[in-house]
Image (cartoon, rainbow, N blue to C red; front, side, top):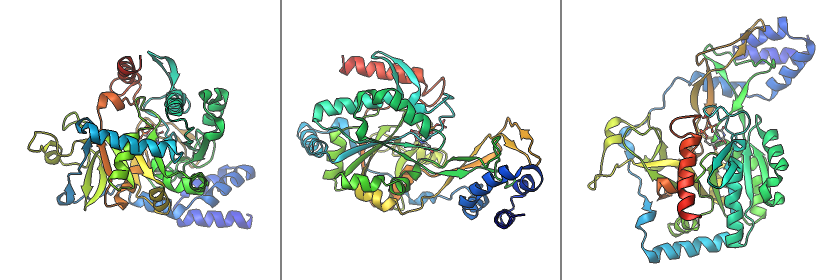
Length: 418
Ligand code: UTP
């Protein structure tokens, strides 16, 4: 056996990867071994095994340290405040200091669309539209309104980068200025089966899955986008998902409020419908901003109301964030915590036979963009109306599906844009 291969096997032995060792010693050809060996060389196996060891540890949250986070309700701003925030925000946007990032690296498993989620087509009152096109519509509108071409950054993953770039090329960026569009890729992490062996895919390589949207900060830096933004004089960056078709990606009020409150980070929220709604809410933990998952919020807290009968923990995260470039710079060098999801994944067994599974069998590790917010003392929260800014497409049918989202989109556009 060649020396390099011996080293790889040793690395696998140290991390209990017996199935891959068997594949490499008894099943794979030399060529297949070379391919998987070069993959293993760049994977940090110790980190993966550490995540695996801790996968079933549910993070402990000290409930006595959770408190309410303050927010500004857009609908309760008086006219004078509204105008002054708008003017301050518009100044920043018009002067070319504002950029938009769309996080499009997800797998969209619940929707089940073949291809990147941004290439999913919906039928709206404004005609048929792809999700990427809906976003570009907003960028084009902002260009008309503010006389500036806002740089657009698209975060993709290994899984969908090629398809995303060629889709937008084919559609000529839906009329947007191609040289203002930039792509960067998020990271991956191997999936690990319950028994600790990494999943080997039918392509005979280790299955690496996108490691969550929290990779945005470090990958902006790794891919040179942070430097580019700084060189272009960008100071404020809006970050949103790809699948909320009412997402307001250019909003001077959000910018103006964050500047006025002297914060480096802001998020928009909508009021939680009821204590049972399955959504993460903003709060403060240990005095720092945090999004707490509905599964982690105790029932008594989820039901707690203030003197006006409103939910104390009632601000839902809608993936509508604003970050100052200084905040991104700080977070780019911080390792965010990983969360564990348990997913279904077919795999090759140690003899090279494909095993098809019907139940979850493997861990997937993900970091979340909002975990970065806890590295700051304060952030601005702007509560907006659900029917005006939140129409997510998550599921193929039922709640948060193309049908419910398009209804909301159509209602909004009939009211304001027709
Ligand atoms: P979701 O958590 O809803 O995931 O992502 P998803 O991939 O769209 O769908 P499911 O859970 O597989 O059904 C929220 C936003 O974050 C992006 C998604 O593209 C979406 O815009 N995202 C998610 C990433 O960019 N990278 C990731 O690793 C995960």
